[in-house]
Structures are given as structure tokens and as C-alpha cells.
Image: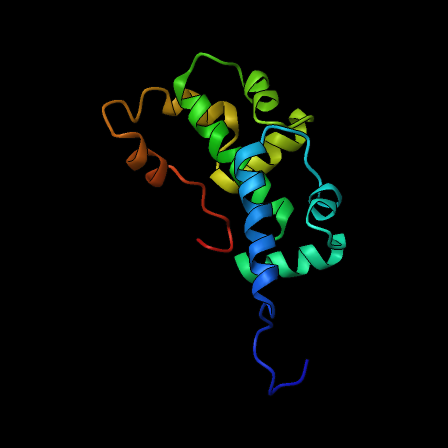
Length: 143
């Protein structure tokens, strides 16, 4: 890219429709086994093209977006306090407790066990839509 060229953008409105379809599938099926290749196949794109276009449109890779959705859901389950960290890990679609804990800590700032201990019941009486917003994980680069 030359110095005169601005940040790349998605060129085709049809690409944006497909990218929304991918994002909606991640939002809906976050607990299912999802990978970029399968998501790309579903919208008839290569995995590389999907990843590039998704990052342009949403500011992060499909995998990163998926993990953020999983961590958001994990935060809600941990606040309830009735599931162990391991149960929450598998309930949100992660297959590795180590990867889940590492990613959770990166996004939330504390390990899931500490979050569970400190947050149980912390949002009682707050409407779910408000609780979701105030407890949303913030990526380190956004902080």
C-alpha cells in the first residue's frame, strides 16, 4: 500500500451482506465448533479473503470476534455462579480450558475463577441489557 492509499475498505455491497451473514452466524452459533474455513465455505469465499474482509468491516478477525462472543457469554454464566469454570468453558464452545482461561484473562483482565468469585450476584437488579453493556470485555488494544 502506498502512502497515498487510505485504509482498505470492503469494495462490494454483496461482500458486506455475506460478512453480516458470517457475523450473525457467529453470534447465533458461538457455542458450536466454528472455524474460519467452515464460515468461509458457507459464504463461498476463501478463508483468507473472508478474514481480510471481516477485519476491514469489523476491525477484528472472525476468530477474534468469535472468542469475544464466547467470553461475553462466559462472563454472564460465571456471574450466575451455578457452574464451574470448566463447565462454563465447554458451555460456550471452547474445547481447551487453558486456551479459554488465557483468552478470558486477556479480554477481561482477571482469570475466570477470580471473575466468578468477585462477580457472582454483582449485577442483580440491573436490567440484562445494561448489565451486558457495562460488563462487556474490552480488548487490551481498546483500553
